[in-house]
Image 1 (tube, chains in turn red, purple):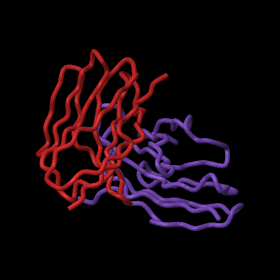
Image 2 (tube, helix red, strand yellow; image 1 turned 180 degrees about the vertical axis):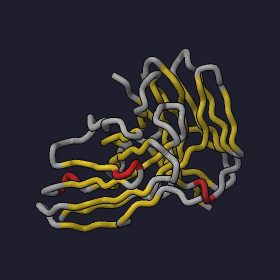
Image 3 (spheres, helix red, strand yellow; image 1 turned 90 degrees about the vertical axis):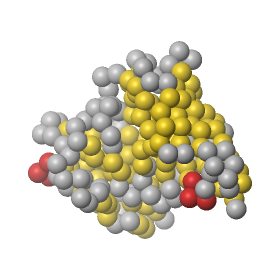
Image 4 (cartoon, chains in turn yellow, orange; image 1 turned 60 degrees about the vertical axis):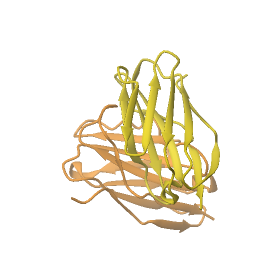
Length: 112
Length: 115
């Protein structure tokens, strides 16, 4: 069964600190993996998208990694800011299928 | 240009009533998706429209749910005889073309509360 699991479920860190969020998936055949940021009361916004051949991609202070062999991805946030408080969702797409498999998200809270 | 818009932003309805949720996709996007997000849960796929093709309704949880997309643009999700378990945020997304590699752009969602 195609599944995406994320950890931790929630995380609280101090402003300025770094953090890493994890994503494990069992989607096959794999097409691509995305990380979305969802602010409270808003729709998700894409941060990065990675295909099979890519193992790292950055978007400002966000760096995503992908290990297609172990079917794991991580999202690293550097020098966190209060505006980083949001849910971060890992989403995986299977080849030939337009449907996306969504993780439940990690709720990140940045405290001043 | 304008992003995806949804209306209403909030809807409170009594159990048993019908509700209509509206989505205006980005102009020129041929693919449109509806999702449901319950509190603390991941997004649940409901229905997918691609151009003039027959929609994929495989995610609709019951026959009380239906959706239309008129003129390849605006879409309406209708829930008949609402139940308390229908309470959730309903998100609409559009993309240039359907398919896993294409970016999906989301609207702000409609928060539905069934009392």
